[in-house]
Length: 185
Image 1 (cartoon, helix red, strand yellow):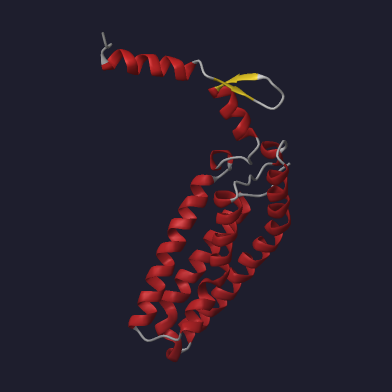
Image 2 (tube, rainbow, N blue to C red; image 1 turned 120 degrees about the vertical axis):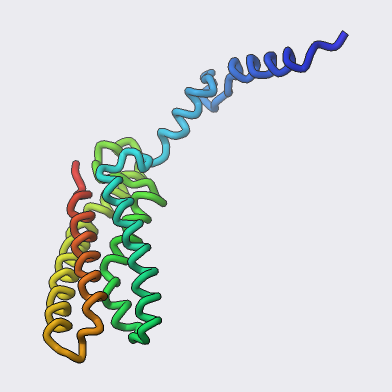
């Protein structure tokens, strides 16, 4: 006589819970232990990134800034070079940090990835890029500040005031984001 479907499903679940994987070194591991060992080979996840809330706020603000700046510039017939110059450094920061921390799974603290060769490579990359990005964002903020003063003083440049002020805000936000995610051993 066939057993009810619910009983078969319960037997399947029990069977799955007691399944063991045979590894090359002939050790038996349960599913959970196997998953944990597999995940341990990869670099850290985004949950181990310090200041991730600030980073995601920066990414969201940057994406909104790009969209609004290009729509606004297109509506007012501004040259594309001025728009690109206003967001080059914050865009480089956003792309680099997204690659290192989101796509590749790097960490700001070396101890979080001490057991992973690729994690240590990413930490080393961030360690070497961090001062460059910090100086670039500071220079971008100063340059945009000078540009904002010029746009306020010259009557012919006053139409650039909203873009120059928002460029200052994005440069300062990029500086704070990079500074807050300093590489730590």
